[in-house]
Image 1: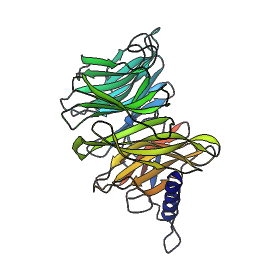
Image 2 (image 1 turned 180 degrees about the horizontal axis):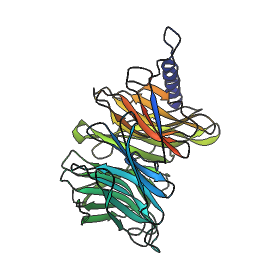
Image 3 (image 1 turned 45 degrees about the horizontal axis):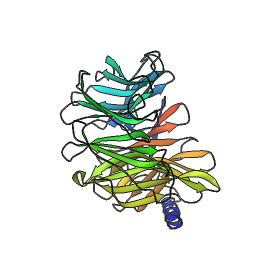
Image 4 (image 1 turned 30 degrees about the vertical axis):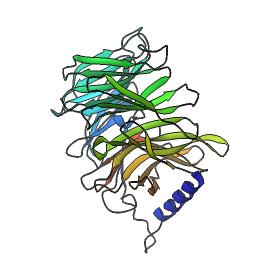
Length: 390
């Protein structure tokens, strides 16, 4: 099956590279660069109602918030120290246009890494900073505004729960930062949350992450709770190849009845461990309806973000691909509603580029945000029909 998919992808790549009659490729991709780095997550980027982007990350020891247009033009940028060694992993804009950042910090000396939450004004000025955690390492990776106007966070914590492994830890805050409730979900393995969703079904909470240190290696893990954090069930998805799986992102479809999950799994490429991208379609309980893999025996590919096309034609994803040893490039992959690949297009950015977040503008065109090299962020926008349009 993998070889068949590899042949399909090679065909897609060749078709994507087809020139126009005048010999040129209609490459309408527009790139902007900005200093700093995103900390390996699509949660670090959010789009507002005007299609502007808010991006958080780190510039050296400082945390930054960057606001740009969808084309990548800087509107404003704020940098600040949260104390100690601090990292920003997620950002959300609330209905009143406040901004919340989540991450981790060592500002509380002697307590290891603590969970970090910062609230700012609409222009990035800090209103308050709060930390949570115990004596271990506690990192908030995900943040969302809930339908009742409060803030929900998902962390990996080894201060609470089972042994010294990380467990999922949820906190719900008021906009003023008051804790409404908090809950941990002990498991015998090591769990890390990669995606947090307030479901369209009854406001239930979904956490998609990894469960590792089992006999099967790293597996995709799904936790669903009531809107007050009381667990409903968790589910570990079987991996037919027995490799390590990391689910980097997920979206709800069909009014919450199904999920699309994207990520990466370990495979052997030219005698060495590489990665193959995957896309799952799972039902409410986590059972897999179908599963697709992207990549072949000579490329290492991973997906970090996914969005539904506005016309219902399928999904757009971004991540990284490696056609040559030690040469990563951000990639755009689109698929139909059954997960079959339609487009597989590297962005031709400098070595070490990774697409961490994908958004669609009002015209359903692609906007990809990620890291380029070790010291800059890129924003790629395809505003017209062309090589990078669906």
